[in-house]
Every structure is written in structure tokens, then in C-alpha cells.
Length: 72
Image (cartoon, rainbow, N blue to C red; front, side, top):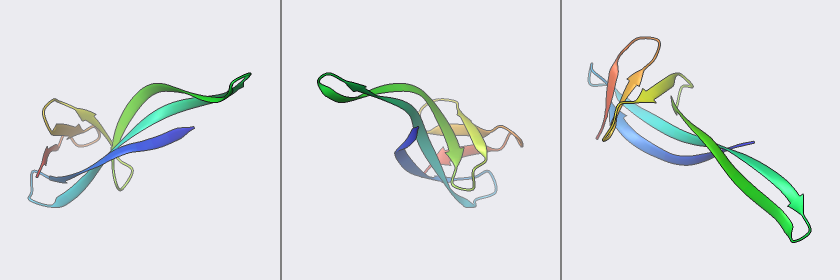
């Protein structure tokens, strides 16, 4: 399962407004003490679904186009 961690308003190289969404994989297991959540890997994508990679400090790169996206 995957959960949304955060949404960040950004601006693209061409000035277009974009939203970067951070997701985290989570495994849920039933234990003797109840249901437990085990967080795993994270991924980032634009609201349109295009994958992006973090470059650090509020900057991402759209993988398919190499466009740089910055936090507003």
C-alpha cells in the first residue's frame, strides 16, 4: 500500500504552477498486539503522475524531460 506524505506547491522552468506529491510505501501487518504499519521507500511525482527525483532543498527534476521544479 502507498500513502501520501505531503504536497508541495512548485513552479516549473517555464513558470507553470505544479504540485509535487511525496508518497511512502507502507506495509500493514496484523500482530498479536493489533495492526502495525511498517514504513518503507518513498517516491515523488507531479500531481499529473509524472515521476520526479529530489535534487535537494525544495528542488526536483522531472525524470522524462529534465525540467527543474522549485518550491514556491
